Image (cartoon, rainbow, N blue to C red; front, side, top):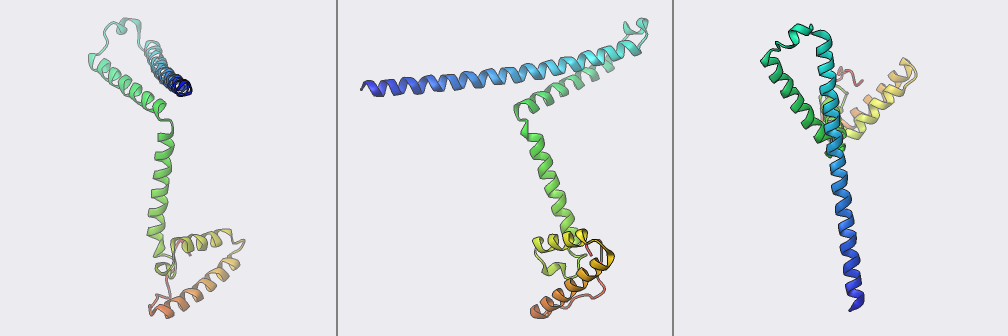
Length: 170
């Protein structure tokens, strides 16, 4: 019975310590976001003060002040979001790059002779071979071998290919 109580107390203590640590980290993140926003505000103010004549500073345009406040709020929100999830930007960039690569490959699959009969991996390997070829003669040899393989594959599948097809992937 005493061991169970001891285990429960230790587990409760560990849970409390973890929660306290998470709360402290979130608080630090929010403080950093607020500090970054305040630094940006100070930079904007210093920039404006330097650019505006002293007598015009007293007659600021209310619309410009609203715009400044809106920009400030947007910056605060962005800073807070980035501090809460620092991997979000990286994930979005990675997803965008993958989407662009996939779209580009789909557009160019028809530009490779027999590309419609090739897997994504085969098209990528073929492009890589062409890219890594050290001379135009070597690229011509790679293309000729590729054309022959595609003709054989098309014959096996009963598909008719356009012989003159060449594009950026070739």
